[in-house]
Length: 182
Image 1 (cartoon, one colour):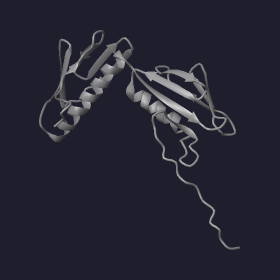
Image 2 (image 1 turned 30 degrees about the horizontal axis):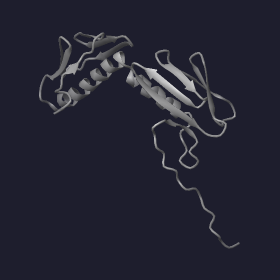
Image 3 (image 1 turned 45 degrees about the vertical axis):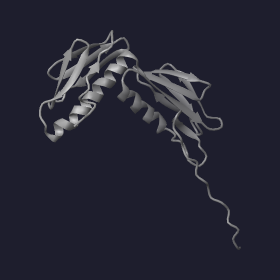
Image 4 (image 1 turned 120 degrees about the horizontal axis):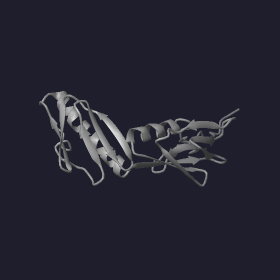
């Protein structure tokens, strides 16, 4: 049983939710999000409250109850407030440049790495090493951040690479010379 799924979702001012037989469309000042409706749950909108109700007590219906609630809640928050993530590029001589929708990473490879950012995501760069990504779609934002991090994952030995601003990477001790015989 989903405890969150039983809570009603409050729809803020300026956000419109439309429920079809197959889709849930959430529109707001930041954008528009389309969610495929699962046949195991039913979405009811009454005034400024939205409620997700299970059709049965089967295991799949119970699983999708909380999942649909979370997807709809994230969509409503995204179109009203938006989501943002901050990435750090750490390393001597490492930097990022933005031209149009393309990020150019200079991160220790022989050539700069180019990364095309989707047009739904806004990018802001500070001090050539701090990247702030903002979007109304939480899934898209998370996937793009993952793809950027995979260009040069943070190294646990030298702590060089791309990481989230709030991510803690425990530094490992490298090889230590053991005074051996010749």
